Image 1 (tube, rainbow, N blue to C red):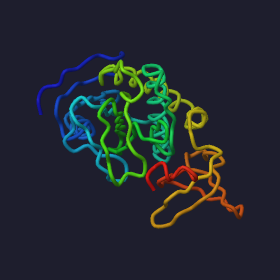
Image 2 (cartoon, rainbow, N blue to C red):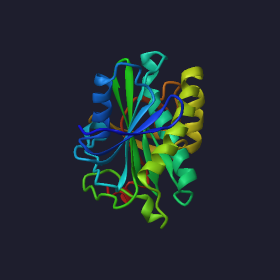
Image 3 (cartoon, rainbow, N blue to C red):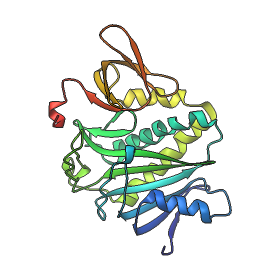
Length: 259
């Protein structure tokens, strides 16, 4: 790999800039292996990913300068059973970032970690464990959103909503600032205050949903998030389903998603 360009972000967090890599997540993983000190707070922004990836093994299209392709290393002090809720920390930080930098983009959150605008996907979060560390990956489409034929939701980008486009580094710097604050809350207070804020920004609480879990479809009303981040879904018979992970489709809006 070539040399890093690094920008001091805060006293403890630093942003490293790279050109073309397989993925920002891979860069973070290699950094952990080569770094002698505590790597927490080191973030990596890649201009182009040749093998970007999303949740559940999906490909994340990452053409040069078309999006923000970012990862950051965290070393949580909370129990490993709470680590999955860091996806809510990460996605909430992304929404806060876009709300300030791109006020014309009406972004909301879809469980567990997608950034949505008008029922289209503008970004997403991926967590990878590298114990005792967690790597948070975040991708946001700035322009030229890819057309992915087998996607549940079509893609969109910032350029569809405003002419004055931020560059990836501007978004990454703002994202790191929001993430650092929310992560400190999570470290000190646990997931509860983060999940409460996440619900305020979510587009699914109180909605009728269909969730694909493995090969089974579960439909019902989303009542809330559980303290551990699971989706609380109540079906037409009153049965409660606690969903750990799945692909959420808003009932009545599936046709708009191409399904």
